[in-house]
Image (cartoon, rainbow, N blue to C red; front, side, top):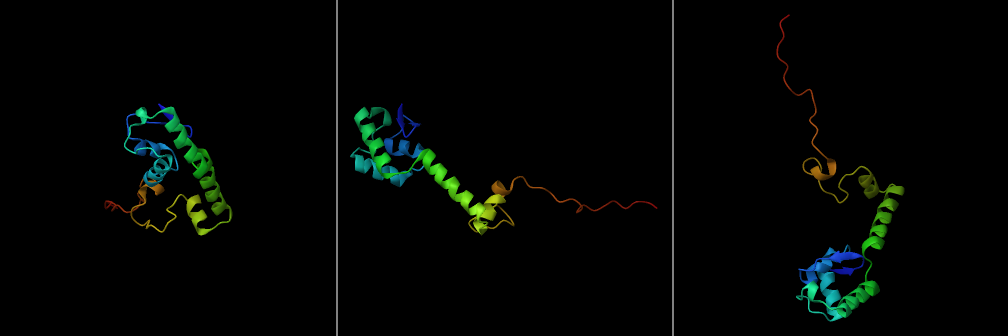
Length: 128
């Protein structure tokens, strides 16, 4: 089991896929890291030597912001938007989409379970 940036990456997958398990590294960044470390992207993680893993770790530490530090930066940016009461910050506060998507329909994951408004059913006529 290889650990890169504090994350245990899967041993059975190719290293180019395994690196994407680290927060902040996607497919393209993974390719770039492996290119710079001079490692074949199709080799399985379990077949890597300790020196190759160390080379990957060195490239990531030198060039990228990943995991906890990146999450702190992102949450700090969102907090700043909320503090200055920008439109995007207000959308984050209200747990609504902040990038212009429609909310009249859809946006269920952000808005939560559908709540039916009462008073729309027809009342049965009563005898008087």
